[in-house]
Length: 230
Image (tube, rainbow, N blue to C red; front, side):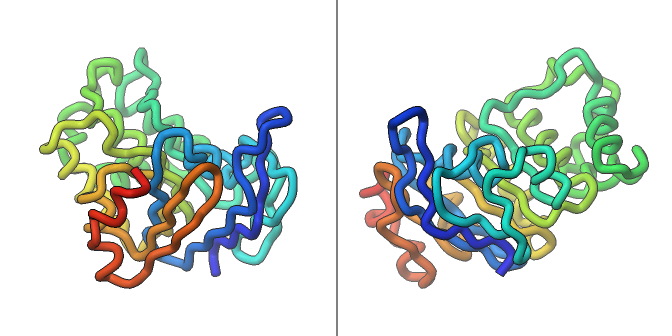
């Protein structure tokens, strides 16, 4: 098991946001978390990534306990978090954005650029353009590309298709499909067609806990059922 989250509680002040939440991801799996806004999905990702500490419970990555470790140390273990806000370094070029990821990961810039181009070939058109001029979808693909520089073992991706046009969603899907099997992904998503197309397993989150885990293909294709959690 690459990632094993066991019965964690997370608090904001005195308010409990996550209650006895457990989930797991095997090497190479694509795991989705679905649920309404405010259900605790982003809190779940931030806790795994080290931006929040659980009040109790365990988070193990490759057999090593990481609960409560700061985000920078979690990242060094091979975990990358792609935030929901699609925020890039707008005054830098696309190439310079990738260069920052290459420096952090300790790889050559040429290797980093090649890796990003593998999952998003169209980015070659924008390498020397300011990242601030990219569309929302192009920014999302740049962020995903930067995250895989250095060959991480686990990607945590928050709402990758939110606010994107249908054509751009398809480009994001293709990028994720290209990475399938190479890197484990835990993805928060509300677009059920995306979820049904990619998921190896789905966790349904409601009011800070997980009442359902789906792994059978027929269940994961049942959008009417999934919509009850949205």
